[in-house]
Every structure is written in C-alpha cells, then in structure tokens.
Length: 435
View 1: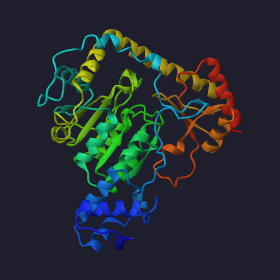
View 2: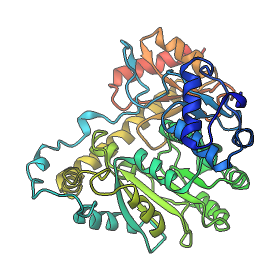
View 3: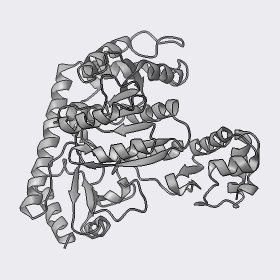
View 4: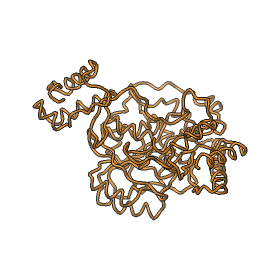
C-alpha cells in the first residue's frame, strides 16, 4: 500500500492519499501504512508523515483506530448525542435536558445591547472573566490560572488537545466514554487509551496503566460521568492525584459539564503542583445546548497556546453571547430556576431507580441527565425488544472505546421527562424485554 502513496511534503502526501481514495484504489476501511513505514518508504522525516495523516484526519478522510491503525473513513454516521433522526419511537436515549427547565433568555436579551466590539479588542468579556474566576477559584487547587472562553466544552477539548499533542500521541479516556470525546480523539488522530470507570470514577489501576503506556493527556469527568453517572469520590480523587504527582506535565482536562446541576461535591485530579491542566465548564446543560459557550480555567502556558487559536477576527466567542451568559448566570431568578432543574433531574432519576428495584432490576442512583442500567441480557437484544414496544434506547456499545469489546449489558436511559405512568410502562417493558 505504501508504494502507491507519493509525495515529499505533508500536503503532497495527503493529496496522494485523497486521490487514491477518490479513484477507489483506497476503499473505506482500508488500513494506511504506519507512520514509520510510510516515512521510510517515501524517504521523508517521520514528522512529515505525521503532519500528512493529521491533515487527512482533520478533513475527515481517515480516522485513527489506535492499535488497529489509521483507516480510510467512510460516510457512515458516527454515534452522536441528542434525538435520533427519523423515528416514530419514544426516544429515551437522548441525553438532553428538559426544554421546559431551560431559563427563558428573552429578559436577558433585552439588557445586553451595548457598543459594538471591533477587531483587535480583548476576546473575553471582562465581566464574564471576573465572574468565572470567582466561580472556579474555590474548586481549583492551583492558585495561578487563566480564564479562556470557548464555543462549548467539545470545542475547548479539541483546542486543548491540538495545542498540546501530535498525531499518534496517547490520550487517556474514561471507558465507557462520552461520545464527543471518542469522536474528537479519533478525528485528531490521537491514540485512545481506555481507563475503566467504576462507581467512584476513574480506577487507580487504570490510570496507572495509562500513564505507563505514555499518555500525554487525560480527559476526565469529575461529576456525572457520561454515560455512567459516576462522580469522583474524595478518596478516589486523592489516590489519583498521588499517582499524577509524578507526572506534572501530563495535560489533565476535567470536563465538569454538569456543574450547576450536580448533586455531588466537586473533586479533582488536578493537584496544587500540577503544571498542565484545564477545568472546563460549559453552560449547555442548564442554559441550553444552543448556548455554545464554555469557561476553561488553565495554567498560564496552556492559556497562551489557546489564545493563539482564539485570535480576534477569526475564532473568538461572540461578546453578545458572553454578555447573555453573564447576565443569566448572575440573575437570581435564573439561578433559582437552575437549582429547581437540578432538584427535578435528581428526583425523577431517583424515582425511576426505585421503580426498577421494585421490579427486580438492580440499579444505582447516579448524577446526571441519564441513568446507566445494567441488564442480564446483552443490551442490543433488550434494545431491539424495546423497539417493538415503542421505545428507542441507547446501548452501552456506543460508548465503548474498543470496538472489539464484548457486547455491552448496559442501557443509558434519559427518563427525567417521563410521566409517572410512562415511567411505569417503561419499567414493565424493560422487565419483559430482559427475560
């Protein structure tokens, strides 16, 4: 295969692969040569081959499958969060917040008009920066941190990885894992190293093994881990920080997506002396997914690198959006509505867990918008049977890092918006489908 790829620059190599793909010589699923092999065949520096593969990955033409290599991407859909398209079934796998519990932005919109912001001005609204610093300072052990505003948490993670890593660098991901993190790592051409998650968060042995495997970044969800709902306990967080003390330059990215809605205290992997870190908090779960804004608190060097990718006139976050977020975040009425939403999600999920237990399904209360339900039967079998009863569920297979893993026995269910009657019906159908 490598003898058909030509070029001496990254752009030429990428164009060659693109041409082979367009002509049908490289078909969907074809495995490209390893970077070292390609570099040796073409007589180029390894970094040139790395850059070529990165260009192809960013264009969506190839995806990294870790040890399975880099393969030619097809047009097949990638699992995504949200409502499933074109279905008449009751979708209980969305992971969405309840739109009725998202505060109305109309009152805030009436107050945010101000002078225009022009090219060359600071990219972060000063008021939002000050508020964010106060919001985050009590949760970060690091005294010296900078605030950056990005277009949501996924955008923050993509930029953080891009400024710190090269293609084929290893990234530790929770397993099972948030869908967007899986997609971001694969598209960037990084190598995902799974770290198992249990009821207390990332496992100690799993993180130790990932560090031994040479990971340069870690993506962790300290609360309401998606899909399991697990949150770091104080004991587990301390054990993980002790291991990370010997790896101060590994980039730790904490995605605290459920922050204001969480029923759990914030625990962190980031120690006081850790040198590369980012605590990311988006507003999408409580102010709405269309509020594409996240706050990233990072060490100074990481902030400087992020700033290079958020320059005025290109990719900064609209100041109108920043002012809207600040106005809502500082409004007592909105804060009260967010607190009420948090209580609602917790109560509805707890109520559903009690129903499951009453019907003989062992379930554990967790934090987040969804529940992670363990089954005796393979999840796909149960999901197929639920479809015949009018429900569309999401299986744990979507969240597995290893596509060759054993079939999942978990369903992730979003049930907080079900009526009591619908919840009873779903539990009865789950029992029947699991027989």
